[in-house]
Length: 297
Image 1 (spheres, rainbow, N blue to C red):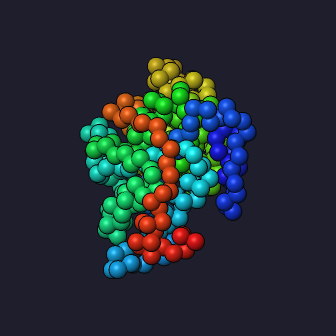
Image 2 (image 1 turned 90 degrees about the vertical axis):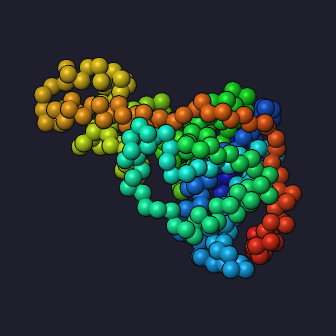
Image 3 (image 1 turned 90 degrees about the horizontal axis):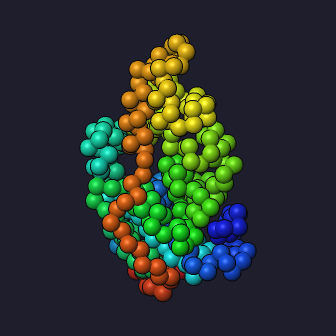
């Protein structure tokens, strides 16, 4: 895994990291972790087991992944963004937002305080804000800091691709690779700054964001490429030729506007990051506490 900004390459063997120039790190590097995705993957990917009658399988998996990342980006800052509660401001806009999600397993909930403790022991800055999601925390940190620092975002959430730019890299933790501009165009059919418009038209079943009925990624991309933005499409929707698909679009264009509000990231939260280099000075004590001997090795 090679750090921002040299078109990173992933390595699963913990190869050492070298930046391409001192200039890349002159103002520091901030690594933003979308914690929830890592917790869920750890819970389902690693065997469930207990330590002193406390379930710690997801904790072990999370620690394993964080140690790999931290070892690759020594001498930089890590900040862990946590979701806070099931209801957010988006539920006030659209009560059905994420209503299709199952309840978080109690075995995951019980380990979240331990995962916060792990982040502290690794020297990570932990951030959560009631009523907002980790995505909004990350967006706020990016807006406030990307002019001063290089930023890596570690997440598989496609919504965060809105933040990709010359100073901000996004690492897809499912595919184990940094996302390139070419990847975005291949996946969504539009440049990075138009991804939100495409998502607004096609919706997102995982978050229960409605979009427009019958519009998939290809049609959404075609419309945005033709009109330039969702707002331009909305202003000219009545000029579209009459056919079945366009009639649906005309009837449901308000759903696209609603979907854009839901998919847009808030970047104005009251968060101030004080840059400090994270270190693993207290990691050994924490790992020993839970008997994670393989991670100690």
